[in-house]
Amino acid sequence: MKTIAVVCEKGGTGKSVIANELYESYVRQGVPASLYSLDGQYKDASSSKKVEDAEVAIVDTPGVLTDNLSDLVSGADVIVIPVRPTPNDIEPFTRTVSIVTKNTNAPLVIVVNGTNRFRMCASFMAWLEKKSWAKNVVKVPQSEAIVQAQGMQKSVVSVDRHGAAAEAVRTMCRKVSILAGLPFEKKQLKRIDTH
Ligand SMILES: Nc1ncnc2c1ncn2[C@@H]1O[C@H](COP(=O)(O)OP(=O)(O)O)[C@@H](O)[C@H]1O
Ligand SMILES: [Mg+2]
Image (cartoon, rainbow, N blue to C red):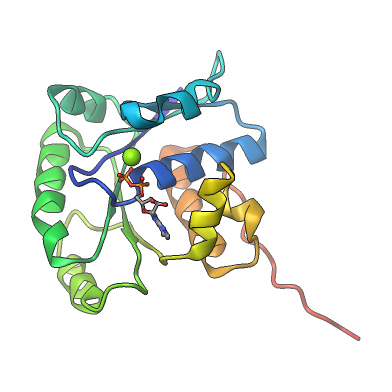
C-alpha cells in the first residue's frame, strides 16, 4: 500500500480539499483508497471513505505539527504540501518543509493554492523556484467551483469538469500518482468540433 501525506503547519492552505481530491481521483479510477483525517474537524465526513485492502492511503493532517507528523512523514511515499502564496504563509511553510525533509527522502509535491487570488504570487513563485526541494510544483487556482464541489462533498472534476480548477486538480493528482507509482488519469484530449 502507498501512503500520501498531505501536510502544512498552517490552517486554511487547502490540505483537506487536496486530500479529498486525491481520494476522489482514485475512486474514479476504481483504485481501492482510504482517506484518513487526523484533523478532527472532518472525522465524520471521511469515516465512510475507508476500505480494507486499500492500495493507497491518503492522510489529511491538521494545521498543527505534532510528534506524530514526523512518524507519518517518514512512512509516506509522497508528501503533498499545499501553500497559499502570501507573506504570512512563508514561515510556517518553510518550517513544515524543514521538518519533512529531516524525516524523509520521499518526493515532495508543493501545491501553490490560489494562484490567481494573491498579488504576490509571482514573487512567491520566483522565490520557490530557487529552492532545491521544490522540484515538483503545481498550481491550483482559487475557484468558486472548488467551493461548490466541497459543499456537495464531491470532486471539482465531476462538478465542473472542463473548468480551470478541474484541469489543475487533475494535473496535481497525476503528478502525485506518478511519483507514488500509482495509476493516474490520462490527460483529457481537447474536443475538436469538426463540423
Ligand atoms: N483552490 C481553492 N479555491 C477556492 N476555495 C478553496 C481552495 N482551496 C481551499 N479553499 C477553501 O479554503 C478553505 C480552507 O481549505 P481547507 O482545505 O479546509 O484547508 P486546510 O485543511 O489546510 O485547513 C475551505 O473553505 C476551502 O473550501
Ligand atoms: Mg483541514
